[in-house]
Image (cartoon, rainbow, N blue to C red):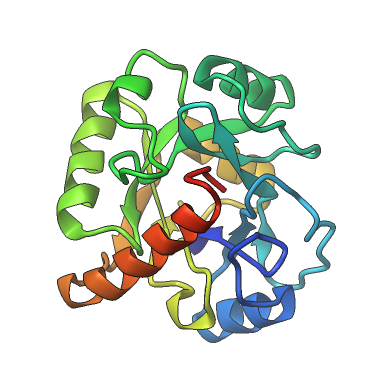
Length: 216
């Protein structure tokens, strides 16, 4: 079964799609798992979903970069150290994933991922170049942690561009978490194409500058 584990709704500071849009597109793309991971909030939850396993989550801005949290029920505060952020996620029984680790304005960078108690690395991000995703995959394998994928969609056109493949015997969110911890997941989909890079990079850097070079 396939699931997009990295989608932003209009509850994120930069999301441009409603929760209803996301659910509709997930069904159109025949996804069976969904995680809405808004920046530093869980305001989109609770979400009533039929026919799709929902893995509650959020994307947290740590002091060193972004961290994905799944299977949590309460928001995790931003701007804490990587270690403390992971501890707060684990204290809720959740799992911590290092997303797009080589993205220079929001990724953690390798030095802040190695040696930390991450449960996995996002090895295929739909808004990262193939070269960055390949480096992330090598990092995950060298650390011996799970590999996951997600579109990082902020607009409807990008939903399901990248995804995580789970074992077909997963029946609920608990099973999904067990599969990730047991490294029974793989990633699939597409990376960002080189032709998209200039427009994407320009927009992202301008937004970053407008925030006073502060991460979302």
